[in-house]
Length: 596
Image (cartoon, rainbow, N blue to C red; front, top):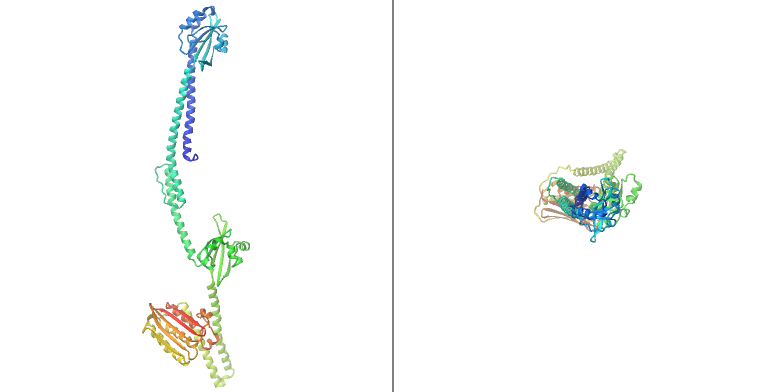
């Protein structure tokens, strides 16, 4: 309480006033006292030095024998009510005294011996002496003068004593008045100090209270400016700082929101770890990649979590084996391959505060890389096989087989067959390339999809007939109009139907159904062939992937048909899916949107 600025202001006003009043009071009282005492001393001196008084007493030859005459003279002398006059002989016996005196004849008992002695020796002296009078202590002014005759012989002593009690009463009253004035001045000083302190501290308290509210996040605090002085300037500065702080915090909040949004929706995972090994942040992508929960993040240290994936990503390993705390590692988690880049982050002093890690799921990349390598190998193999056959048969012909017409004809047919196979492969590769790079010249138009399917069935029916297969076509709609490239859709249907015929044994059946579901055309090709193993179904649309490679080549397949079909259907905004059970058959379902 007393440490507040209000009490400091009161003290600033109180102490100087108090000290000033004490100094002034002491000075005034001392001045009054000196004035009154000097005045009494001067009056007594003037009284004692009157020539008439001294000469009248000095003319008596023997003071002791002239008591009555001297007493008469003393009684006639004008004196104040508080003044006492004593005539004393050289033996210190009182010869006469004023009417106010109540002393006995022995002067030594009631008067000051020192003054008497000095006066008898011819010196004038004065002294303040306290005496008992009527059971109370009073202060008196005492003066002693030698009584000399014309021959300068000391005949006796004139002793004057004045009661100073009235003077000291006056001084006491003056002191009391001064004390009252001091108290009044102090009260006024305190009130004035309180008023001034309040006018200064209230705005400061207001600033303090509102600053505390601002510290808790309430930035709607405004100080009313009531003056142009320093307090008013403080209020204006507070309002200015509040406004600037509000703007700055809004910007920080906006940037924080942006950063949180970026971190939340970025595809890469991000984990921040402090020097104590606690995970201080993990975005949703990182939590999903590592299958972490909020509970695990709060309860488990980073090293305990990461060492199960890769020991080289623990803080201890990074600290020991990297110079700058930067590096990268791959970790395998379930069916995923994750690439982790890490680097230290620093505080405002430039000191390392922890490590931030960016996690990238490179599973698809690795898969694509493997597929690319496999694709190159497959292309090489697919081209090498017919080329090897062509080369072998050509060399045989050149070595003399041309002379044997039947053998030469057979060899040339084989060469032509292999060349046709290479031609199909190259055409399929070129088409896939154009589809991949979206360089296909699409000829989309309003097309009756039912008619396309029906025409495709008719064109391929001869193949089914050759294998004594039943090829059934069923439609629930007379026509389904869609916006599509009819040639490309027919290519897909021919490819799927061709596969169904190839992999369905003689005497089997193939059913083709067409229907409409809202704004989607649905096409199903169902056979009762050999079926596909479940493990191979996810890879059926991969390029050059074959379930039975040897049989596929025997049947003339390139391994690219389903990949091309999938690309064409996707380009039309549709989907193609395969369901199959080994030994029972396969169903291929295609869905195409009918709106262009």
